[in-house]
Length: 170
Image (cartoon, rainbow, N blue to C red; front, top):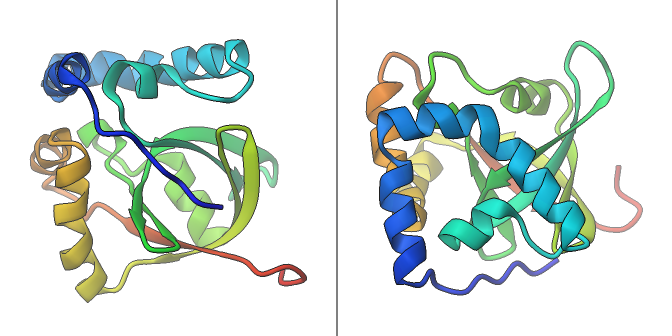
């Protein structure tokens, strides 16, 4: 599945700068997923509130809950490295890693949905060399990642690499 994104316009770049501020990030951490789901339903899966407001590349990641065994779907910003998708578990700079990152460690097979199309991926933790290479990618996508890293300096933020699974692989 190819993910293509348009560069953000001036209004979207401005919203991204405001969203990186600590109080705004706190609010977004509690509300944005609900807005994303509503906009996705209204547009038939073509876009999210995050994408409309910021121009950021948003996918829906469906994991299997580490404890519950139930599917859990989360809208996330992702990076693209060739055929690989890169996820940064910043949790808006929060105290803990996001739940989806624990799910990936226990159940690495995931479904990624983008613009109404879905594909299976295998996830793994990025190697130290990949982490070094991917943080500049994160910062290029969204400058707020630097602020999140600063607020979450007490923990190592997980970075995950998702690779498409071939048909018949499981």
